[in-house]
Length: 120
Image (tube, rainbow, N blue to C red; front, side, top):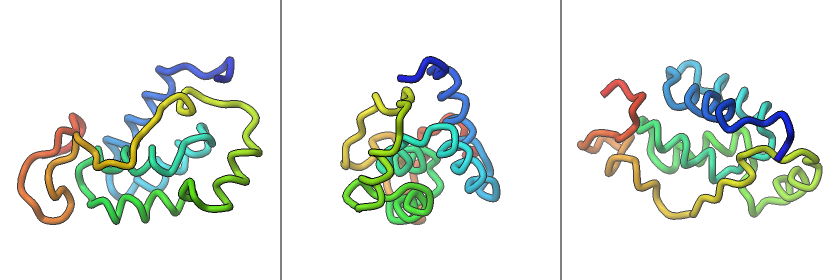
């Protein structure tokens, strides 16, 4: 973990992605990836699913625009070039579905998202 990295700073950037408008989502994700280049594709997918406004495939596609999936050659090459690790390098995610998202979120399904920043 880098000396300058505070978990509270990371939480503020993550919160911007969660509560941001759809129009600003690309800018917010870009800011996250710029400040924390060791964020993984899986972490971004889970974060996007927490928003509650997109399905799993859309979240994967959006995350892939910013960070290559872990099994790609681009991702492995990028990981070896990162010198400083942030707090996000200590966060492990699984490939299972996000337990906090509403069932069928973003796919027209009912149920409320558990995202505290959502406008439901």
